[in-house]
Length: 254
Ligand SMILES: O=C(O)c1ccccc1NCC(=O)[C@H](O)[C@H](O)COP(=O)(O)O
Image (cartoon, rainbow, N blue to C red; front, side):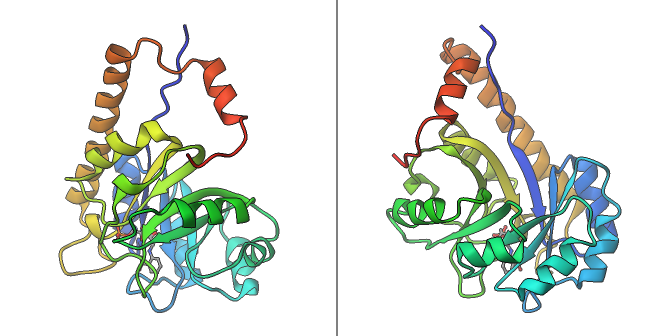
């Protein structure tokens, strides 16, 4: 029986330099994020984001991260960067996201408090409100919105079999394998999103090429483990029919 073995995707966020974009691409990143939030230490101007995004080969997606932006700015920046996806990481409502992004699908951050024992409530609200969200970026709550290097309690997440999940917050080459083992079987798809964990220690916004390579290698290793464990311990692993039945079933947050 033909089985689906979806791999974990990789997003590297908060890039500010050409060399870091090149290192992320070389390591096999699927997406790279540019922070267009002026209060972030990783802020890049729209012009700079456009310059950096032009280095990307086809099929590596530029992500434009905004926090409570002026809607006009979102359109202006997005229209200058081919193929970009917008990520809303602030307090924007669903209608503000849709309006600012002219109806196109977007990434929606869900900021989960580190000590939240039951994030199902906030997830359920966000998933039901943001019908146009392509995926949900599950990140650790912080007053400064994101990029803190702190993780929340992944073990408290409910199964999300119909949601494309982007896991963020405190991921590193050392812990990303554990995150994948725990969450990949429970989501429709999993992307891991890292910023602090691939930075030069003490230098926000400057990435370390060795940590970039280590992070990507750790993701590949976890995927290999996951795939072989699935083959060995679960001969009835998900068939195409089962997968389609799951993805077309009504929303449930378990
Ligand atoms: O990176 C920032 O400075 C930032 C500022 C404001 C809102 C969001 C921000 N980053 C969000 C990201 O997408 C990060 O990749 C994500 O929060 C993970 O960050 P980290 O815990 O540092 O790996």
